[in-house]
Length: 219
Image (tube, rainbow, N blue to C red; front, side):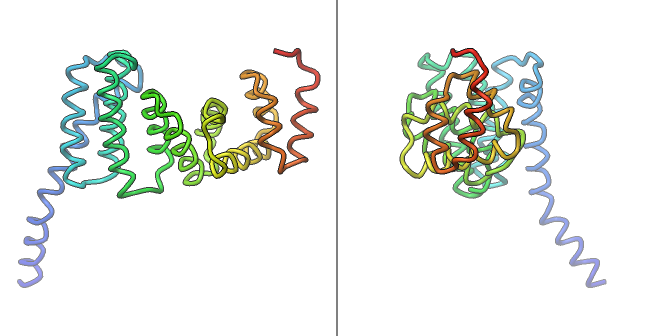
């Protein structure tokens, strides 16, 4: 009897949490649909963002923060990132993403979204610092590798020494994983000089990259 009473009590305590998690699940559906390429009305996306931010404010999980940030970034893209509304959405995205990372810092995909939010706000040194955190928390992730190299090239001029060291390690990691793919990225973005500088501490990788680039037409 006592076990049954305790079980009912625990279930009752869990119900508000379950209800809140179900609310988050429903609120994130328009975000997932928009990311999958399904047209979603901005008003519906804004409503999802508000509901997710409310859930994030109640400390449910980093997922609620991440989804709210994603929704705000999409709204910024709808409005135009350079417009006042777009900048306001990006500011809101950065705030909710940073709040989530304060509770769960080992989340490279959330850091990766924050890179864009800061970059699109013109906060380039902040974006470079965020890039370093994205790299440190997820040094090898096949889904992020190419994207991270691309953003690293863009943010290289704004990186401090620690971020540049992280970028060097990321290039070397990418080389070990997919040397041909790294050469393609370097060639596509005409970043051979930056790559050579970044790979100075990894002469084997630098020499191999030079060999791979040697036969390509200069850009």
